[in-house]
Amino acid sequence: MGFFSKIKEVLTKTKNGLAKKLNDLFSKNKLGDEFYEELEDILISSDVSVNTTLEIVENIKDIAIEERCRDKDYVIELLKDELFATLTEADELDIETPAVIMVVGVNGVGKTTTIGKLANYFTKQKKSVTIAAADTFRAAAADQLTVWADRAKVKIVKHGEGADPSAVVYDAISSVKAKKTDVLIIDTAGRLHVKANLMEELKKMSRVVDREYPDAYFYKLIVLDATTGQNAYNQVEVFNDAIELDGIVLTKLDGTAKGGFIVSLSKELEIPVCFVGTGEKLEDIEKFDAEEFVDALFE
Image (cartoon, rainbow, N blue to C red; front, side, top):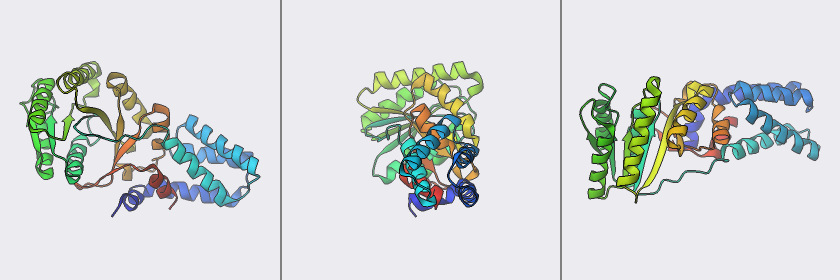
């Protein structure tokens, strides 16, 4: 099963809501001001941000007026084109090796599971992988990560609970440099309620990577729970201000009818969605494909 068939499954709630509303709109409304106002309402109700919605609808309206178009299918194609263009405003992230990937995000978004899936993803690409268990704050975090490392059949570097996270990163870098490992994935704490301490900790770990492994490509990915919708913006902004994020990994997309927030996420924050979790299994993570994502919304 490829990304397109999986993404169709996880987007069931979003696409069913969007498709039904669009069909209702086209059945009762001719193209005109009222039509476009209702189209705005539909996109906003799917959690596309207000600013992004207004820009998308304005662009569609301008083209439709210029082309003197009254055809439903043509307008849908215009909408698909606008959604794709919006999703791809942030440059696509291509991960090169040797890579260090720092994975951040608040507790409960699926960070540990995502790291296990990413480890397996790169292993399947014939890359050697090591995981650094640098969340030394949360009880049993390293133990849970070890379970996923074992499933993915990759090495894990860990210290005891309460240890300095940067020391874990330092030791992990020493190991991957010695072994010429392709990918190092770093787990981090997600205790946003003590935000200042956490952000300083992440900055310190980033400095260790920059200093100890300047030859590596360093990527910082944030894991977002798609069911949080627009609230995810605040999380992205907090982490981005501290460490300058390179990409977004989405989890739990199958649990929300408001997947539209992804459309405005890339545009307004200029950070691309690069991976999507598509299920509970180790192999259920896929590289994000904007064109297939948009197609799946209308299938």
